[in-house]
Amino acid sequence: MNPKTFALPPKAEADRLRVPLEVGKGYTSCMQDAKEEVRSRLNIEDVIGEYVQLKRAGRNFKGLSPFSAEKTPSFVVSPDKHIWHDFSSGKGGDVFSFVMEVEGLDFRQALEQLAQKAGVELAQYDTQKSGELAAKKKRLLEANELAARYFQQCLLKNSHALEYVFKARKLSKEIVHEFRIGYAPDDTDGLVRILENKGFSKKELGDAGLTNRYGGDIFRGRMTVPLMDGAGQVIGFTGRILRDEPNAPKYLNTPQTLLYDKSRHVFGLSQAKESIRKLDEAVIVEGNLDVVSSHQAGVKNVVATAGTAITDGHLRALNRLSGNVKLAFDGDKAGLAATERAIPIAQTAGVELSIVSLPGAAKDPDELIQQDVALWEAAIKTARPVVDWVLEQFSNREDMSSAAGKRRFTTDSITIIKKLEDAVETEHYLRKVAEMTDSSIDSIMTKVSDQGRDTVKPLKTIAQSAEPQSDADENAQEDILLGIMIVHPITRGLLASFDPDLMTNPTRKKLLTYVKKNSEPFQDTPGELKDIETYVRIVELKAETRYGTWQASDIQLEAARLLRQIEVEQKKRTTEILMNELREAELEGDDTRSGELRTKLMKLIKETARG
Image 1 (cartoon, one colour):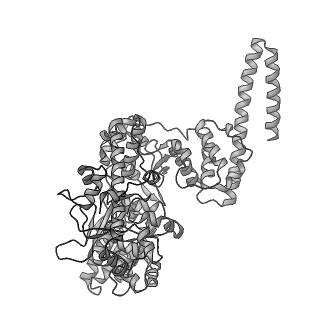
Image 2 (image 1 turned 90 degrees about the vertical axis):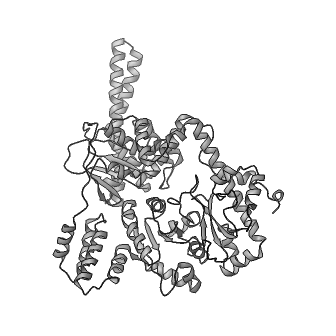
Image 3 (image 1 turned 120 degrees about the vertical axis):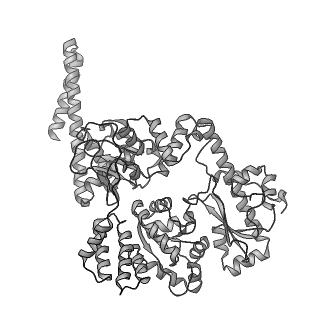
């Protein structure tokens, strides 16, 4: 291809390459970038779990307060919201504030400690290096975007590739366009020459994952499928060889880069997220082309990870859209092992995991879809809970009529069941193991005891002993009201005549002003409230914890009661202020001022009496 015929993206398209960091940020912004990167890599429950013994309580975790000598757990950690709140002391915040509290550190020290745990190099986030990192990410995104266009154009000009894509793979024009499928010609450095002509250096192309160790094109003679982030930006590629060869890998993926991390990347997420939200379930398959085939067949809540290595990062990315995840892995030994590994990860991520089994001899979803898409849809619909599926696989490989088979089966099964965090679910499966082995539940429980639960790890010492504050804030009812308004948007209609100035501090006033103007619920913190995000999540958690089982009508009455209470308290405070001002005016002999204050006082007293 002639480099001169390959144009740079127009400005509008270049602007679409959204890069979150900008060159020239100040120190505060750089530290915010570092903070968000550290937070994204750590599970708040794991960090806090080093100091507090936590137990699963629904989607949250609970434990005894490290700040007070309580006997009933009131310390709550919310992985979804990335915050904690201690109802006994009134303290709360994010993972950084917790470490600051328990270790007696300032923010910078806590950030450094957690960055080391997360494997984040803070030096790259100083003002100069942050700008350099931003510029580098932008360049790598531009290189990958241009590579995607180049591969698309090459596909249109190669009849062999077109035949493979449209006839052998049976892909439609619409799906090829949607997933931006292309073709990397069997050329040593065709892409390199194109991008060098556009001003990219060899190092930049290597950093983008587009070149091999010799500096030439890494993708050659392959159908290319771009790897995109959640926003649709190209961050890498999968290359599928057109004709299987003995010494050539069938699939080739972009190596780890600044943009692409296979432990975090979910293929097809930008195309599938709307369907996942709508259907409230995500299906994970092994291959990227399984995703493409499924989307073409109209089943669009399907994504893929890099092989069977499910990570916490994958499940948490999906959990933002739906807590129901179905795995469609091969039922072989590798698939079973991957499923076993996924169980504790799903428990930690708060995901309900189930398994899709392919009928007949179909080796993957793509092959099943080619037979009949209805078979694929039926397989998804009839997915089984993960532990049920695993127990069946264990029983299939053992002679369940023999003592030795039962011994091995119960040993393996109990190992899996011990990873469950809910007591009722655990008992359910232990009883099922007893039934499957024709044993008594007592004998199974004895074996559980003999195998021993995981040793409880020693907790870290709380360096800073905080004194209990007994629900510290006398205006806590304002937080509770605001939490209700977030969790139950229908109650916001009660705010029509409520004055935000009645709130006792600017943070509360800002949140109330927002919910008063906006009737829509929000899962992610709105941009207008990002600067008070931790506070928003804490009041939301307070309301969910206190009113989680209440009926809607009772919630409405509670919100109305809190509004009246806040108004009464505000009038009392105003009365005290006016009385103090009146005393001062009388002592100074200011009759005019004294008269005005008496009039205001009388009016306020009458309003309070009516209220």
